Length: 489
Ligand SMILES: [Zn+2]
Image (cartoon, rainbow, N blue to C red; front, side, top):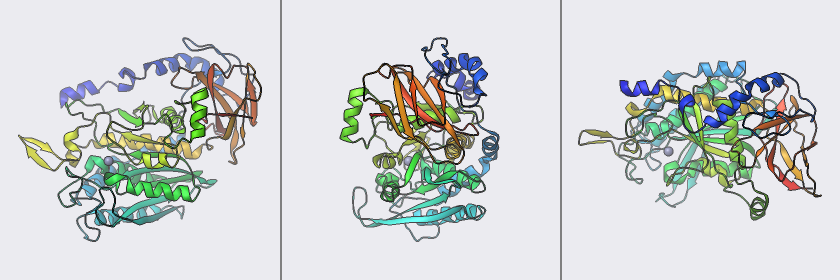
């Protein structure tokens, strides 16, 4: 282990292969950005800021959003011992298979459900009435991997927002588990990495955020039925959709427990975030627009992923967020897909390199090698940093204004500039808006133009040649995710 430790001692965000161009660009731009960052929202007449290697045009180089004092304090309170205790306790239920016993007090998914519910209720008791905990339950009729009618129960803790309660952000882990045979409901399946680790992240954040006041609503859920076919999260997402809920971001933490690859190498400071391009729920009309003017790299989920990089890939989390431009890994899926199917922006966090000897495996020893998803193969320091990334993302989202709505790029006439308009948000601390843009070939936004508290602006740059977006800013400088405009009048 020591030789692996020494390779790992270098911060992977500095030597990692996938993101040097952005970081190099940003650091080169820091001097310019620092000069203008402190200024309040200026008019649209921001000076041109040609940057080393970047495109030239209006605005200044964009830079990540640093955590404020309140968020840094929250991140420091994330408790590795509690996370480890949750993972070990969940493994002790023997199996948490969706078809296992629902009324045995010691073994099976019912006992796990009741324990999670009790813990969440304990957190909510300290929330001053802001957090409520619900057993969200339905009976799944026989279907794929469900041979008999089966009750599926999600444990859902909701921290109601103070000023924008109707705007919702969701984090989930799935508490069901499996072994080699996905229909085996009795053999041991400790499910420590998959996915007690994700449940522990959601629970630890629920505990810490319960005692804080959030502007928007944050939901922390342990969902069931994932291994059988995303049943619990599917039900949850459909309930939100049926209620017309405004879910502006959802994260599935699934297999976030280990930093060790199957060849033994370790990468303790990288977390993958899978984010789809073309939206799963795209309508035919939206598809026509996309084919006409582009946008396959600008789905709401991609904007959400860029946002996570901006607020959570930094020294305060100690983690590099490696965004991957696809919905999920080959042959795999997770609960974010349930939300994508309902048209909600969503992504999946997962560890950097997986070891398939410790996922979906019967607990056994073969030729001296231990198989099975046991707590001993988890890295609790790593899970703690995963929780920090989630906390930075969720807390930043929920304290910022919502993603701008009704963002339109005006196309009534042929022009060589760009007119944008949008609907003003209702947040009491809303300060105004920023237009962002980038070359069409760039993966991430490169320039920002503060435009003030307006709902329309014209930028002296051709919409034919670059991509534009709009984001909201509050009086404390918290930014929303970017909204990608649709053409219109
Ligand atoms: Zn899983």
